Image (cartoon, rainbow, N blue to C red):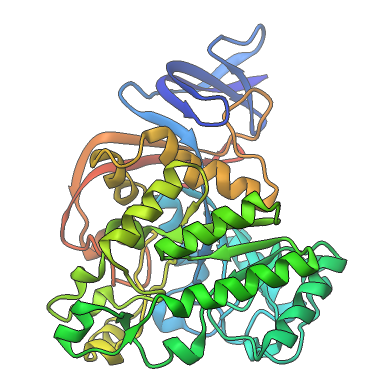
Length: 421
């Protein structure tokens, strides 16, 4: 048997609470041995990882892929390459493509293009409702059979509580997980940032916290009634964290994530009308940001990308008219490491929120243990470089670190033992 040998790496594995410098031997896409040389076989290739960190591959619970339908923003190939460069082995693609991922044909097309590209593995989220219109139920069972790992309506509204209840009952019948966004459109419609003193000072329409918390209360009550497996995508508020804690204490089958941007920035970043920080859900207050970080530290929240690539013209409009979203995949892991540098999270807490917790949501195994698939990221904390437009793989250059110095770099990413970046 032939082995890939990774030598002298700092192995960080939150599942086993491992953080030590050791060697890993990989064969046939799986970890053969950890910390010891195999009894038989030969070393085909050795990587000297001295000074580098080896972690389970990152898993994204929600990113926008522009294909099919939005070729000016990128392609499945460009965005999965960017994701791999950011440390992701798996990414959940939202269904708001054009056409919408509400048929098995679109789901299969996404899977075929991702497989052909050969970078991060795409896990499609199918549409909960036809054309994401929020009225007629999509054939969720058929989408699941075609390869969709869960269902979502992205941030599009569901018509009313009755439709949402029927969606949950349908999904519960087949044990199909739902990815739900808590957003009351009647309160958020027309808003472009967090409702508060900054929005008032800048004269911009705000989105109140209640747009999220009222919708979340409705979702949690219906989850309790129907017993559906529900994942709450992209929460942003301190009150939402408290509501989720109570739901978990009551035994509800719920999980949740928050976007990386909401852990790094607040609504103060909007000062100067920089449309880069026009994102949905919006950046909230420092009090909200701190509550989200603490929930991640406790293991209650996963971290998602909310990756939204846009062409330059989409962000050149006035702030309130610019298309919301931030390109995040390129240099994602170095960005996330900022939370460790600030001493807000430990490295184990961060890796757990980016790999183990998302894996548990999806029913996957993502761990650096003997016999496991070798899905891993090798990270060099010493590397420093400037992220220029030519360095970015994504079709969207609306990146918060563009033309800035980045500390740390993803050296290599492995998916089932094969290098993808």
